[in-house]
Image (cartoon, rainbow, N blue to C red; front, side, top):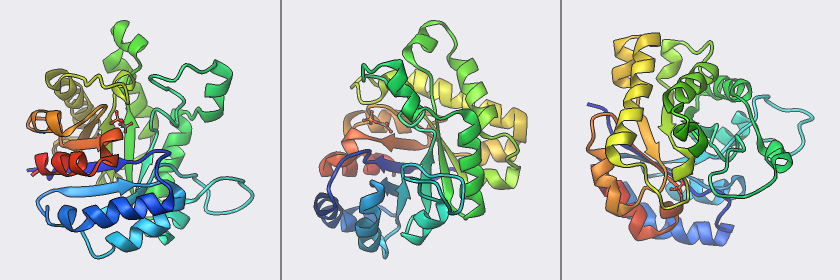
Length: 264
Ligand code: PGA
């Protein structure tokens, strides 16, 4: 039986004082939910204030991105070692917003290029996180155009094979996969639970084919995209969804608690 994992992705929200207030109000209530794994991913700048507040709880702290080198002349980048040093145990990788695949922002292609990362850079980041002993939360998902063209499953397979190139079955123990259809992120449009479960099943089948039964049965596959307290239970009670990666609702205390409870 896989334990459910609920991770809040705060994205570019909350000043340090606001992050402190949110977590101070939530820490004890979240910690009491010991039947579910929990995590929050503040901005880099708030990790240092959030991590001490959660240090004696089972709620993990994660970063939203990283770079693959240890240190050096890489202006603006933050290494896995630095994230770990600040108190993180996990890190998101390949979120659609860092891949430049925005679901709702209407921005020119030249601007998307600033954000864009490829399966190759995602693969380098995963390997760097593994070396540092951090859990990598690999985000994958199709855009609306890819879905409408009938390419959802092939997009998922190519993102998995690119991101996990050279990753061993032992490495997989420190990886969580989050299926996040780009068209459902921050739009209020949830992928309905049968379809979300189907695609999470496609992810698991891919792992089974490449790595075998043990890895597939162990792998936690989360769903992300407009998860709320009202739809979490239905999503999490399907066969292949093992929790959620939660954006907007993770900023609202009652909502995040409700989603966390749905994972019990
Ligand atoms: P959302 O974001 O819950 O606001 O849709 C999810 C995510 O991007 O991780």
